[in-house]
Amino acid sequence: MTTPLEGPQGTTRLGHLLGPHGVQGGVKLYVLGDPAQVLALRRVYVQTRGWLNLRRAESAPPSVVLHLAGVTTREGAEQLRGLHVYAADTELPALEEGSFYYHDLRGLDVYGAGGEDLGNVSDVLDAGHQDLLVVDYGAGTSFVPLQAPYVEIALDGGKPSAVRLSADAPAGLIGPESAEDDSGAAES
Image: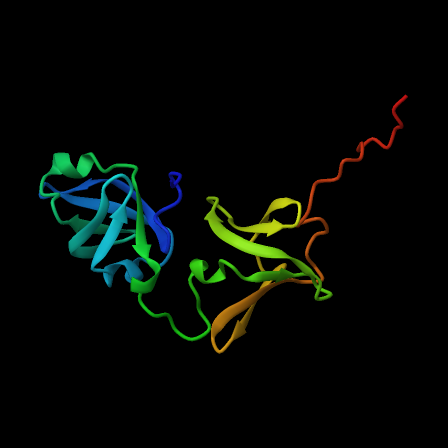
């Protein structure tokens, strides 16, 4: 079963639908990444609706307008408002060398500045102003801001091969929070 921010296995979230555009079923998509990448797709997965073919997609900065098969009226487009949209990872357009999709980070090992194994990336979340790596480690899960210069993505042949925390990364990004009393006072 998927949660609202998860699509089917092997998909990446593109964004969410904002509402109708025009009277013939167009619907605006708030795009999380590069809107141009959406224009190259032939189909998308719409939360609760499944896979829908794209009749066409057009740029409408800062969003993209999708014309989905089976959605031909403004009312039909209105019913899609707020739903999340995904693309199959294998159908996303190729990127220029050295660039990568966030789904390419899933499954990568995470290393500390000294080369120590800290865990594994299970997902990447769009948290609004900051994208977060979801890192599973031996005793739990940590959310690590995907922010340079603290997080470096190692590339091998132009593809991500590992995630490394730099020496400048704040201590304690991965692992349980300190259980110590911040005041330093001993309990009696």
